Image 1 (tube, rainbow, N blue to C red):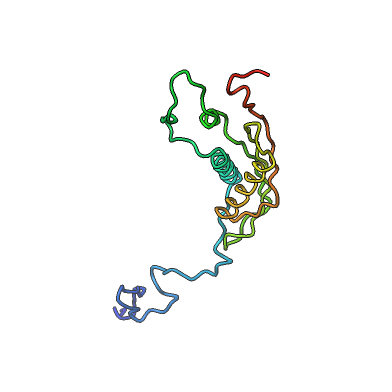
Image 2 (tube, helix red, strand yellow):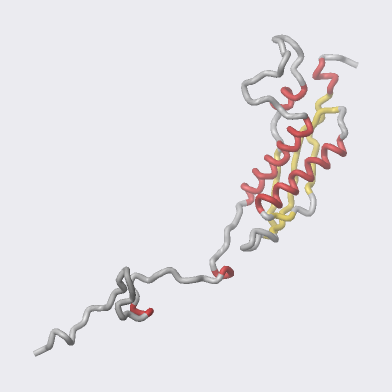
Length: 173
């Protein structure tokens, strides 16, 4: 004959206390502190870094052009049949294209990443080509550092096309 006091159900922790249970018998298991180095990592895909670089180049080009009007709005004083202002023409061009190769992902603190970046743009001419290229490089480097923790030792910038002011205004020669 067995006594009912000999068969015991596992002790479960109540919401208010341990009810005599040891850590090994806690049910359900609670959260455990995991050291930061053992928690895993967040990997930022190369495509995401590419989009960030393209957006940074677009921002730099917009700043260099003096800004563009919101979508659907025309420039003040623009009449139908009048030459299109250079800023509006630039808005219709294909945007900057970037290629990124992430060499090292950022650490858990969000820094220490390393990426190589190549950006292809189209610029109006005449302009200060060196100044424009420097501004685009700076913006891409700063934004990738701020947003993704990526160090960019240099941005390879390719000017794919120059758009002549003479062709924009219809003048020849």
